[in-house]
Image 1 (cartoon, helix red, strand yellow):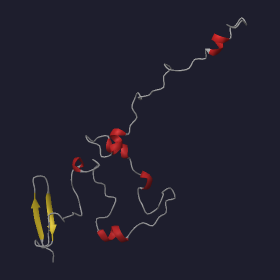
Image 2 (cartoon, one colour; image 1 turned 90 degrees about the vertical axis):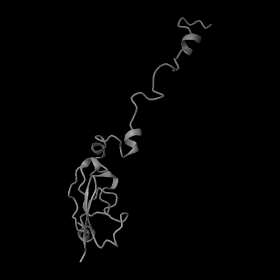
Image 3 (cartoon, one colour; image 1 turned 60 degrees about the horizontal axis):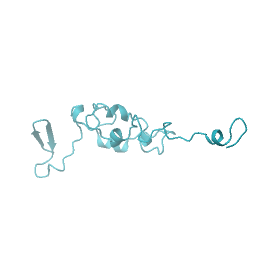
Image 4 (cartoon, helix red, strand yellow; image 1 turned 180 degrees about the vertical axis):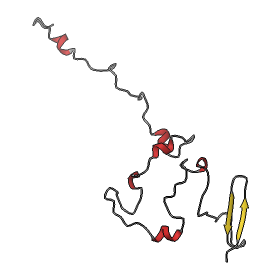
Length: 134
């Protein structure tokens, strides 16, 4: 039977299962996470999409076919079903570097203007309208 060890930190409370000689602080991966949205990677509250049991996650998959996905075994292939922009907006420091650096600037460095264009003056200079050339 597995022993339970209660660990309380300043911010969280953990329950470690197993004998204390087998437990390592670096090898502990919790099966459930109950952090507030501010401490998660995507600043979103936890949604229960997947079952908590590891066996159910690995061996009881839905075998439906989605013809819009690149490969059907990847759930978010080509970012279908993800709303990345809504997740990135409330963050102080964005997770994706493209959120910070990939947006278009209002005025481009070499913006298209009419300051340095060729004007058709050849006809006006060499061929006068009265028919006399210079």
